[in-house]
Image 1 (cartoon, rainbow, N blue to C red):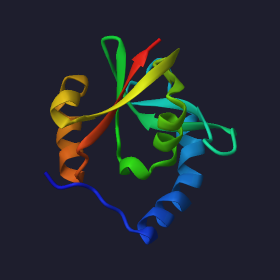
Image 2: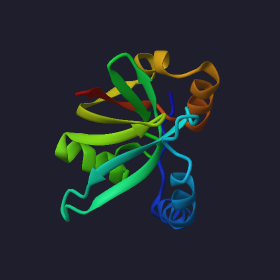
Image 3: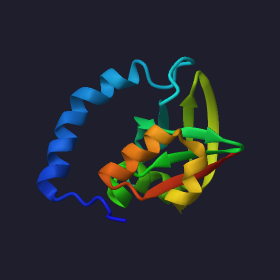
Image 4: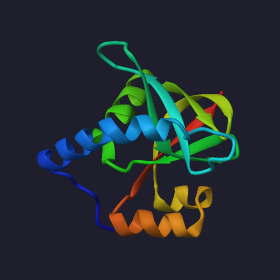
Length: 134
C-alpha cells in the first residue's frame, strides 16, 4: 500500500489553510450530532501550551481510532505521543485517553464505515492512532 508523504511546500500550504479552516471546524467538531469530527486537546511537547485540534475519529469499544492523515509528522500526533495522553470531545462527551498505539489499516477497519475506509485508502492513509479510554 502506498503511503502519503508531503513535501515542505505542501505542509506549509496545509498549515496556511488550517489557520482559517480549523477555527470554523471547531465550531461543529465534537457536538452530539457530529459523528465524523471530534476535538483533541493536547499540550505542546516543548512549550506546554494547550491546543485544540479538530480531527476525524471514531470510538470502538473502550478506545478511539484516529487516522494519521499527515503521518507521524503532525504536531498533534507528536504532542500526544510525547505526553502519552490527551483529552477528546466526541459526540458531546469528554474522554481522557492514554496509551497511544499506531495501528495499521486492518486493525483500524472495524472502527470506520466502509466509505471512509475507501477514502483513506484512496489518499494513501495506512496508519492510525488508537488510544484507550481511561
